[in-house]
Length: 451
Image 1 (cartoon, rainbow, N blue to C red):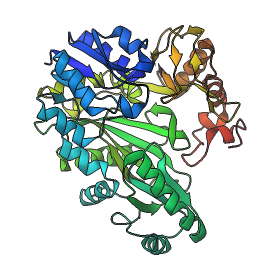
Image 2: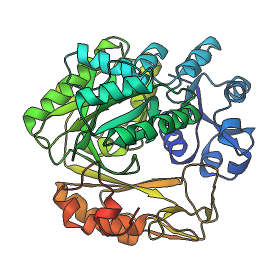
Image 3: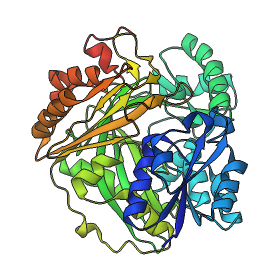
């Protein structure tokens, strides 16, 4: 096992990784920008090294500074968390070149699954249904118009290297496609350094369901069930739960078996997520694979009792899984609400600032993953996510009721947060009856936002 791990990230995921490392007896090194000097992950780590100014590109994406920090501190592994460098194959290669283990899948697997077009071809070859769309990257606007005409509107224009809703546009006719093509390409270039796009059919009223997989370097692959991530705003997940309230046992088997086939097809090692859309008729379609730990991983941990960060570290260190599929047990229901420094009553406008009051809920079946504390500053330089509230119940109704109770206990002062939005959502019949779809803005459905 590793002696010392550098966490190449910030916020709640850095705190999350540090906690598991401490339980495993692994020393931790935090990196931070000048804006994050007093952040919780810095205070919790055994060592902390500044890697640059506040701008993300000059600090948390600054590969030379991060590698230097790892070498100076004597870290023998780097955990990238999620976002930032977590799915950058060249970063994994650079780590290995310097004798530092990258806690994630092989660079080759990241490259294959990080390219949306290539991932679709791999899934198709593995016998997993894919959404009808372009066979590869679109070369020109004329190609886009031709493909859209062939598969029929509405369609989605998506960045090949995209994620988080960036470089993604839904278009319903030729006029919209002409306008969206250039906009999406420009946005993709800014966000991911590539203008490459592809097109796929837009599924009306879909559910977004993903399967968590875990694999070692010796060919063992298991799934850890699914998460329903259908509640989204502007391409960003807001609420996640496990198990999905809409899957039949037959559909669940098809989706989990397909996820394992895809993982085997690319020689995957570590934790990863195979994402699907499920339409109103119960048909499922592969859309992408995330080759990292997900923001929503705690709901899987709550229903399986398996620490995913621990498993990441174990398999990255060369250990075997030590479990078969039959060893994975699923108990109860879990829900996660993402907590952002945003004002839900004002178009979800970002609300950075200093937290003056902070009381997190507790009690049976309640977990809070957060980087917040009284006196900390939510910086305008980074994503507004400051924590996640996760609950477990013996069934979905019990989990929803527990989430309502926990949200009512949660108090954060000094900034606006999305906690009031989550309170309304959990009380709504639409959520309780699983009638909010991925292509709907839940705030609009609830009448809280007209955006």
